[in-house]
Image (cartoon, rainbow, N blue to C red; front, side, top):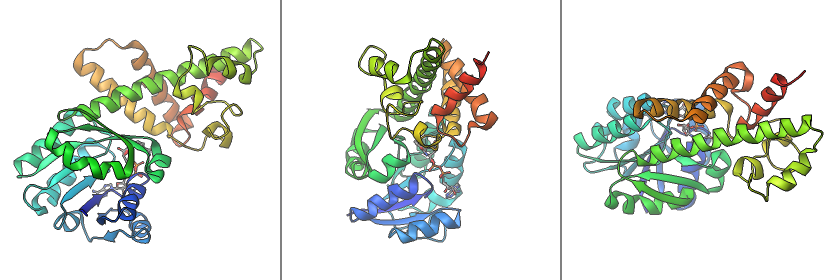
Length: 296
Ligand code: NAD
């Protein structure tokens, strides 16, 4: 069994750490938010007084934070210095590729190892232990981390070297953002043409328009009973996170000179959606802004 330091016990990190405990690992956790610490304690996590205190006795350190700069600050703020030589640092936050590579370089410079392993699957996936991990790592580090990641995820994909996990995450979520907008626009157009939502779903869910945004996270209530649309768009995957991920995609499009007009437009639409009341709603609620803009 492994001793794991878990830094960032929020919506995702909390249940991920709890699943490691359930599997018999020793988890020493830290979060700056006291409620997150209380919840983690209740799930069997040993709570430390600080990040460095959590890392000191760990074989593996997992971070689940919000932004790239946060990861770099936490690494440089005592975490790397406190860890035993050669500790494997796994960052599962969704951050930009450059920050992911910079974080690993910091780990290497401090005598450790590092990898990026962002996830897809949301809070429900974190709770159920069915996340998909997208990993950017050396082969030997991947082999060491894989059994632990399997505890938290149903699928663990080795995408390549450092930063490849974040690259996969950004590309996947660009597909998701664009496809949710396309599905939502099709439902609104169908409504205006007098087509029932169920009829469009019955056709497209088994025809060439089939995609996850339609068949699992359907943006209209009814056809998929447990999609967020059936519970007033409570997330699910919040609009602010989609806006954040598409912001990462936009920065990557610009830095690589990639001409992705749909991705660029999706980033703009989700930024506005999040700024104008959609931040805390499931990202599929963007259908309501399309409906509002289409009212005549
Ligand atoms: P969250 O805000 O719930 O959790 C982040 C946690 O980090 C918070 O509890 C915060 O208090 C803690 N934190 C901040 N600074 C810290 C520090 N210096 N030391 C220790 N703890 C610190 O966010 P989340 O929803 O759990 O998301 C975490 C990451 O996972 C993000 O990068 C997000 O984009 C990604 N993600 C989220 C989802 C989702 O559905 N929520 C899905 C996939 C990926």
